[in-house]
Every structure is written in structure tokens, then in C-alpha cells.
Image (cartoon, rainbow, N blue to C red; front, side, top):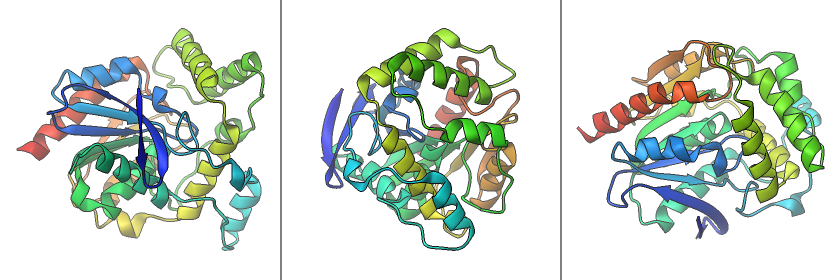
Amino acid sequence: MAHATANGIRIEYETFGDAASPALLLIAGNGAQLLFWDAAFCRSLADNGLRVIRFDNRDAGLSSKFDAAGVPDIMATIQAAMAGQPVRAAYTLNDMADDAVGLLDALGIAKAHVCGASMGGMIAQVVAYRHPQRVRSLTSIMSNTGNPTAPQGKPEAIAAVVAPPPTGRDAYVAHNLAVWRKIWSPGFPFEEARARAFLEQSYDRSFCPGGMARQNVAVIACGDRKPSLATIKAPTLVIHGADDPLIPFDAGKETAQVVPGARLMRIAGMGHDMPTGTWPEIVAAMVALSRQEAA
């Protein structure tokens, strides 16, 4: 892995594939590190002629932390937003999108295919409308438009995800395995060994629950993105699980309806995760989109 200075901060990143191939930037979700994008998944994309770049968002992994901003009260922030009051945030999705473009600058990449999952999908969307000249195509996975009136996830799934994790390693892993079970794809076997290894590696690499909370507030502060999403010109693929308990399928459906010309791909049995059983279908669709743009 390597790091770069981008948008005024340190960003840790890793690449797969030929540097001369078209670039594909992968953006992780809330609290997740670049490890979210499994190396085998990245290699499968690289084997199809893409230069794959995965990186740590700000406040995650080995990228710059914003601890000086303190840890926000998530529930108070949500209540303020629902009441139409200003939301105080250390940064917003706009800043995180600018980080992604800053990384492209640091790597000398003029245009890239951009893909994000969950909050990463939101960041990818912002990149597509905030920096349209830098985006060859957009893939938004299990994400939404920020529309406050859209259907919400199941209360138990939301509560599990926003609950502060324990600080001890074993307790952290056990807690998050329980969270994963609540949002896992019901149509696929639970991959406990892979999930456990991911959680252990994530904890050992960087434990930063405050960063996850600040990223949550960044999402809330950005508000409804629908008007901006309607301006996106890049070829767009929206992928969403039919059984997502955290961000319902209808949120993905709305995203595809708002972005002009977007294609919606519904995956039966998929929740708020990417089981290995979904990879062949997802990789094939992303590669096809990249080749559509190239044509």
C-alpha cells in the first residue's frame, strides 16, 4: 500500500492491475477501510482490463483523522436535521468527494470510472455531479439519494449500525459480527470466517469509532441530493439488493430514476453487503459499463 497528499490530507491507497489501463476508483462506506473492497474482488476487476484503486476515506484506516473535531451525537444530529435546524459537521460529503478527486490528481489520472458502496455510493454520486469532467462512469451500490421522505431501513438494522462499538478487540469483533448478521443477505450463506478476518484486520489496522460518527454526520449534513443527481451525465449503473434492511431497495430504485439514463440492477437475496456469491454478477456489470463508456 502507499499514501498520497490529496486535498490537503493524507490518503492511504492501493492499486491493482496495469497502470496503463482505465482507472476504476472504489469508495468504501461509513466507517469502512479500503479493506471493504476485498483484494480478490479487486483482482477480478483488474483481470478484466481495469486499473483498480481502493483507498481509505478521511477519518478511516490510515488516512488523516479529524479527532480534534470531537465525537458528534448522532441522534441529536438526526433530530436537528428532521427539525430543519442547521447541522454542525466537521466536513461533508462534498469534502470527501474532493478527497477522491484529489487522489486522482495525485496519481495523475484525468478521468476514472467511479464506484462506491453505501456511503461510498453517496460520495461517488457527489464526485459525478461535482466533478463531471473527471468521471467516465458511475456505479452506485446499495446507496440512496439523501431524500428524507424516502422509505427508511428497519429500525433494528439502523440501531445496530449506529450503536457505539466496544473498544476491546474481541468484543469489537463479536459486536460487529452480530451487526453483520442483521444486515446480511438472506439469500446467501453467512460468511463468518471472511467477516471475522475482515473485522480483526480492520481493528488491528485502525480502530476509529469517532471517525465513523463524523462520517455519519457528513452524510446527514449533505441533505437531499436529488436535484444535483439529476444533472449527472456519466453512464450510470445502480446496484441494489432486493432484501437490503438498512437502505431499502426502493432507495436504489429512486436513485436510478433520478439519474438520467441510469440502469438499475436488482440482486435477489442481497442485503446490505456484498457476499462473494454476488461478485461475478457485479463484476460483469461493472466491466460492461466501463466498456460501454470506452465505446
